[in-house]
Image (cartoon, rainbow, N blue to C red):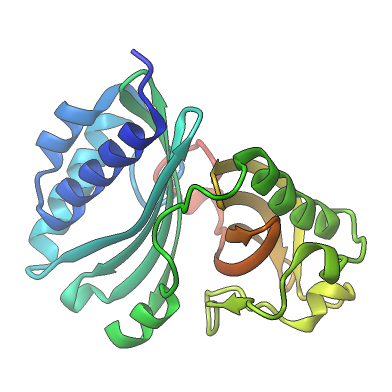
Length: 256
């Protein structure tokens, strides 16, 4: 049964909150996960049972947990979540999550996470509109966001006038683990390198991309979230997570 995009986003949010905040990973898996669950988070074992056990253990490791889904939207078969996790002694984290559905069940997960010094700082990184506004064309937003990243892949200059509305533009990424938006983006001097876009999820004026690249020469997964107005990017959020040795991962699926 194929579900509407808004229903996919709602189910993805419910699944994530049940698992992480409420500690109900068994119920979350039974309700929302299919027979197959392909995991790309290197910390979490593969399969439905691997996911369930990981988040069951977290509910005991961290007595206090709060999870807020700031943004949730979907396109085609994949939902995107922009999440704040406050895990008490486990730290404060920003997470971008991609969840792929087959019918009404989640069957695959990708995510990037970065720890932030405190809750107030994390909330600042999450600022801006939370929901698609219905005023932009989904295909146009996807094309605009994809063209920016493709220019970085091809080492071509980005036409800032044709891509960004600098009168309105806001950038939310600063600090370790959060990808900065420096002038270097426009002249090829950035220490971030993009190699390939693996996933694009778009809804109206929001586009989320998961890309493979590197930072200072180390392999990395890069997530970008763009918001557009009148065809131009006016807001950006991003998280970079470096990729460790395959031997250290809980499965062999890779990050992408």
